[in-house]
Image (cartoon, rainbow, N blue to C red):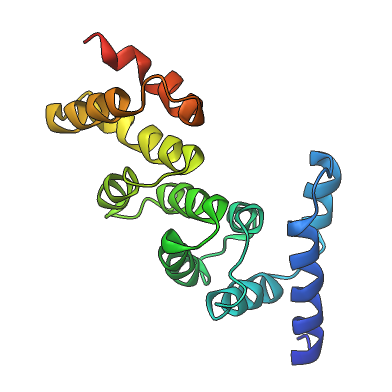
Length: 169
């Protein structure tokens, strides 16, 4: 069994890896295999308790790659907390993470995020809700209204392109 200091150091190195941009997928996947489950759990626990500065979106997105049965509850808490992050990438990554974790309130979180003023966050929320729009005319109408309110605004090009097929229906 690893010593507590070893686990903390391994968690620090793991955070560096998850925060690194531009690693090729095979290198990244092989590097992840070198880390223990204990260090993965430790990193998620540390991040859950870190508020200043809040974790960045890239790191939050990559945390899904180190999900374990033991850290899922902490991941959920971390993502819920970061739905209100000052960093828009963290808000979008948190929505994505909660969706991947099949959180029972993901539709409510996505509906709340429709008021966000960032295209990436709005795109993530709309993507989640589009899966429900076929079965729920209320959600479909809300997404049509989101499209109508942002149509023509180049600041929301991703969301507009995603929702455009709903505009004529």
